[in-house]
Amino acid sequence: MIYKNCIHVIAMKIARMLLAVALISVVSGCANFRDLAEEVDLLEQVYVEYQVNINSEHQVESFVLVLLQQVDAETIDGYEVVIGNRKITVTADTLSKYLFTFNDVNHDLRFQVGEDFSITKLAANSDNTELTITLSETGDIPPTALIDRPLNNLVNVKISPAKIGEKAVLNEEKFDRDTAKLGMWKPVTHLLEGNSGVFFLDEFDSNKTPILFIHGMNGTARDFAPLLAKIDRQQYQVWVMNYPSGLPLELIANGLNSLIKIIDYRYNVKTLHIVAHSMSGLVAQAYLDLCRNQLGCNDIASFTSISSPFGGVSSAQSGIDYAPVVMPAWRDLAPSSDFIAKLFSTSKLHSTTPPHLLIFGYKMSGILNQESSDGVISLESQLSDKAQKRSVKIYGLNEDHVSILSNDQLIEILESFWLENEITHAER
Figure 1 (cartoon, one colour):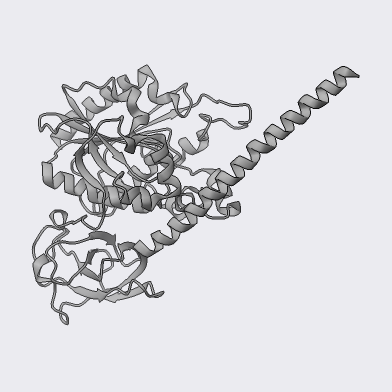
Figure 2 (cartoon, one colour):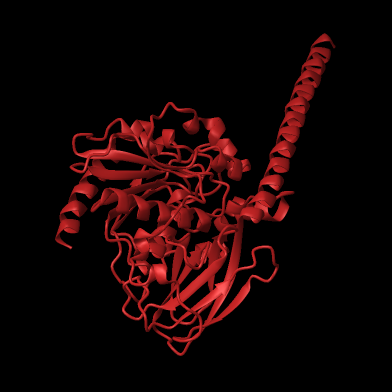
C-alpha cells in the first residue's frame, strides 16, 4: 500500500511538472506568435508584391523591371528580369515609387534610346497590386540618368539596414542563438537592429578567394564554426551571410542578389564560392536562378548545398494549416508551394550555371522519426529529382542535420570541389 501511494505521489508530481512545462511552452508559444503577428503586419507595411503583366509584341525578348524612388534618380532600388511575356512578381520596398520597364533588346542590362519602355507610378497604399504594362518607344520621357548605364552598378541598398562587407567575429551578439530566434519570430526587428547582411570574418584580400557561408532556419553563422576552423586562410577568406530566417525565401534571395551585386562592384570579385546549409540551400538556388536571368552569375565559381530540403518540409504545411499566425518562410517551405515549384528553373538567355555539389546527411536521430532522414530533413526532400539532375556531384555523410557541419571529411570534399572549379572557372 505504501509502495502504491509512493508511486501515486511521484506520478502526481511528474504530471504537475509536465503540466507546468506545457503551460510555459504554451505561454512562450503565444508570445512568439503575438510577436510574429505584429512583424507580419510590419512586413506588409514595408514591402509590397506587385503582379506584373507586360503587353508587348516581343515574345522571346528579355524585359527588365527597375524600381525607382524618383524618375530622375541616379540609383535604383533593384531590378528583375523576365523572359518572354509572362506574369512576374516584383517585390518592392514602399519607398519605391516608380516601376521603369524596358525591352532589353541586346541583353546588356542597360537601357538604350530606341528600346521600348514604360514608366508606371506605384501606389504602395493601394490594394491594386495587379499591374498591366504596355511598352512603347514613344510617350513618356525615359529616366535620363539610366541611359546606357549598367544596372548592376546602380543598385542602392540604403533603403535596407543590411550590412555589406563589415568586419565581424563569430562571438558577436548578432551570431547568438537568441538573435537567430529573433530572426524567426521578429524578422523585421532583426533586420532593423543591424544583425543582417554579408559580414567579412577576414580582412578583404584580393589575392584570396572568398567563400560565402549561409545558415539555415533559426541559425547563425556560428553554426559553421567547426567547419570554418578547418579552412586554409592562406588561400581563402571567409564571408558569412546573416539574415532573419522567418522572412519569405524569395525576399531573402532578392536581398542576397542585391548584396552580391554591390560586393562585386565594390571589391571587383572574380571568383566566389557559396556554401549553404539547410533552408539556405533553397535561398541560394533561388538567387542563382534569379542572377542567371540577369546575367550576373559570372563570378560564382561553385555552389554547395548541405542538408537542404529542395523538396520542401511537410511540417511547414502543418504550420500553415494549424498555426494561429503563419510564418512567411513556412509558405515557401511547404512542399506544394510555388517557390519550391520554381526552383531550378532554366533560363533561355543563359544556359550555364555554377556547378552544384549536393551533400546530404542520412543519420537518423530521435525515437519519433519514421522516415529516412537526417533527423530533421527527409532524404526524399534532400534528394529531390530536380536537385539531383542539376548537381554535378552528390555526397552522403552518416551525420544528422547539425553534426554534418563538424564532419572531418566535409572539409576535404569542399576543398577538392573548390579547387577543381576554380581551375574551370578561370578558363571560362
